[in-house]
Amino acid sequence: MLPSLQSLPLHFLRPATQGFAAGLLLAIAGCGVSSKPESAVVPPPAKAELKTEALVQHETVMADAAVAKRSVRAAPMAGFAPMPAGEAYPQDIYPQGYRDEQREQYQALADNPIHSVTEAPVSTFSADVDTGAYANVRRLLNQGRLPPEGAVRLEEMVNYFPYDYALPTDGSPFGVTTELAASPWNPHTRLLRIGIKASDRAVAQLAPANLVFLVDVSGSMDRREGLPLVKSTLKLLVDQLREQDRVSLVVYAGESRVVLEPTSGRDKAKIRTAIDQLTAGGSTAGASGIELAYQMAQQAFIPKGINRVLLATDGDFNVGISDFDSLKQMAVDKRKTGVSLTTLGFGVDNYNEQLMEQLADAGDGNYAYIDNLREARKVLVDQLGSTLAVVAKNVKLQVEFNPAQVSEYRLLGYENRALKREDFSNDKVDAGEIGAGHTVTALYEIVPTGEKGWLEPLRYGKASAAVSDKNGELAMLRVRYQLPEGGNSRLIERPVADSAKPASDDLRFAAAVAAFSQQLKDGRYTGEFSLKDTEALARGARGDDRFGLRSEFVQLVELAQSLRTTTASNPTATDRRIE
Image 1 (cartoon, rainbow, N blue to C red):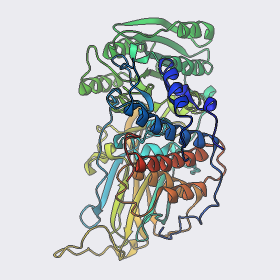
Image 2: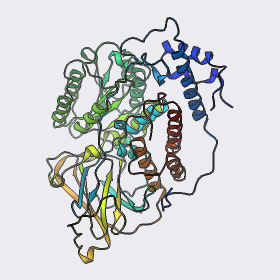
Image 3: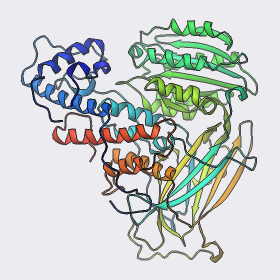
Image 4: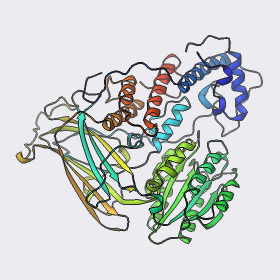
């Protein structure tokens, strides 16, 4: 039974538009609305389950919104005027021409190419522990919108979830795990999973922290998903502070100013009061705010401690330095002083995701998108050690494939983390950082020698024979890293055995997330493997799911299926259709 009009979730709309949306829904109350290749990774089909209440509500709102849009276009309401500049009509339920163009900014990245092992046996890339893409994609789907392709970074989607990897036992900062199994979407290929797991640290074990909260209080943050959520998020972090920690608070709008000088973590009431007094309004001079925040970090610098700026913003810089490369270079220059930069993304409609992700990368920090308070708790409470404490820096991975065992390969994700082969041994080339407790997952899809691949065979080329005593090896994995204090890099080498086995729950689930990420884009490599197949694969690989994250992912796949069905009958109902 569908929910009543009174129970429909109108809270996602701005107060000024809630009444209008409710009126539209009441006006239409009388209208009728109707609600793979077999492999070792794919589980048997799951039994049909009842839809969740959230999914039922979502489908109802989407259907009613579509009817509302058609009705209004047929007979525009008298006195209905466009919203003020800078505002955007949510959910695309308003007449065409009344909705502002979406101003969210993403970096468009082409998928990694397919490589022939005889031509390019070595793959090199930088580690990445960011997870912001997943939370942002979740936000878009929950709003009833399919994400633009640039919003989907496969490695951040996969790395959002915890996996059961081996911890280090040899004194190195992290353990290394590999696993090989059949691919769920291609009977001719296999998936190679590489996992890195750093030892965790309790908050009490962390070095003293010098933190600068840098908060965007410009007019674009004056919305429920902006400054109010920022304030609630920072208060969660305040609860974790210790006496030896120091906190400063810097804000910026048309100009930048210091709201709170460096203050001991024991003065929690004083810090909370400073946060509570923040209000939004004005333009966005982001660069000057970053400069002032770094000045405060240097003022309270703790030698051998954690010195970090935490930037909370939608990234909509429009005053002062707004050039993308200049902002990145500023972060690069400041990291040399020992102060890192973490970016926490907030907001909708005008969100500059590209800037947030790249600034954190340049500033030797990590990037997260905060779409709700639960995500804030995950990043700044449950994973605080990972967010703040670096156990290894400039972490690079390199895989050399054995041509006797592998003919072709492609790296799934990490498109903007690719490195040249010679960069691997060059300590001057910057790479990713790994925090305490962090996990890094990388997936390769490989074609075993003799299987049908993606590439046409060469007329004049011939695979060279591998050394006979290495034929049992699929590949050689190398991990290079530096300790947080610097010095020469260190090397870990692990041969990968050519021994495919039934996939673990972790690999099956990671494969489902990877499939979903590709399906949200063009799906060129997943073939006939459908969203329904992805849902079944993920549902059967949830395992213990202590925090319910994997079950939530299954619901997101269900939402994507619903959105595809909606756009099939009404292509204008969402931003983009999954083909």
